[in-house]
Length: 85
Image (cartoon, rainbow, N blue to C red):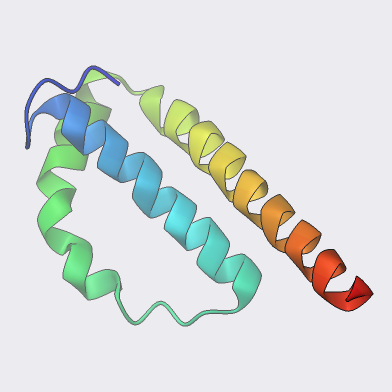
């Protein structure tokens, strides 16, 4: 994502993907979003990235969904193994 140092636009882009992925996973797993207020500090970085590339939200959402699908697939596979045991 172009990250060169902590706090730069590449870092903000990575964080946006991670936060979207966490939201997708939390929704799928039925977790309450009590932690959202803790992440307000990242908003300025995300807004800068989104202003520079208005399409990035779609890229970030796609990457986040891919990661969530991967993790959920791993969870399903682990549950099947546990059931078989």
